[in-house]
Image 1 (spheres, protein in one colour):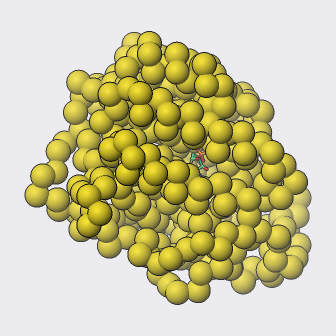
Image 2 (cartoon, protein in one colour; image 1 turned 90 degrees about the vertical axis):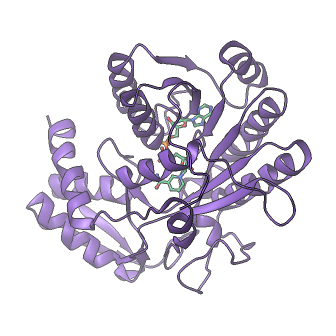
Length: 336
Ligand code: NAD
């Protein structure tokens, strides 16, 4: 554990972009439950079911009067500058992005707007306002076809295999410049396949569940020969809660810049994942076996030794428990 470790400061104002999204919703809810002031920002786009985003937002709005929601677009510099001028956030958590590896194959421009122009607007706003810590979402996809396992943040990774991954790697490089030039402490988080209640309909655990329940065939890419480090949402939130008030210490170059993996450190084979999901749903899947998809990678596997060293924390929810919680929510929310 870092000797200077600070508990979460409830008196600070936390700006969470992407607060109507899956991870942003759960993080916002946790901070509100702890008594913090949270400003949420999201454009509520229709990349997936907008009513799910609205449902998350309704929960946050009814959870606490300390939650304020601002609808706006990251790529709109005037909106982002206005947000910072009005609310003066102390800690900024940038989760808003165009997510999804496969979608980036056919929709490249959405990624440039939200993930590059939008992120630059956040960096510029941090530069001109008194922000004590910028935390932003990167992704395990930056590791590309890396075959050295587990994936370590010390590995040099510069060969993304999707535009989504390229924008996430770019975010890490852009944050580095702003930390170095303007002294903004920044922490990048490489999330590994996050799943759980209120999750994303575009992700496999969700779309598989829907198809299995409806008796439709699920697409099993690379004939099921793939590994993913599935990470339960509560572990992601716990990891983030630990670091929000602990900006990085100076590295060997004098920069307060750090990147962490947040992953389960226990990759599971896709076929095991499907079997576990079938057990939780109580129904067998019809499977259509297909070759590897463009932009996909064979495996993901997080080395989390930095998380353990700095925060004495490691994600540890077993897949069967996490999928069980997801399925309970899914059955209640989505099949009513
Ligand atoms: P999500 O799509 O559920 O949430 C993103 C939110 O950002 C959405 O509500 C969307 O409306 C909003 N948004 C998108 N573009 C915007 C823009 N230009 N302006 C304002 N709002 C905008 O995704 P998530 O799963 O919650 O992911 C959160 C972050 O973590 C993203 O940056 C994503 O790339 C990253 N990530 C997620 C995973 C995962 O498995 N969920 C894995 C790796 C990285």
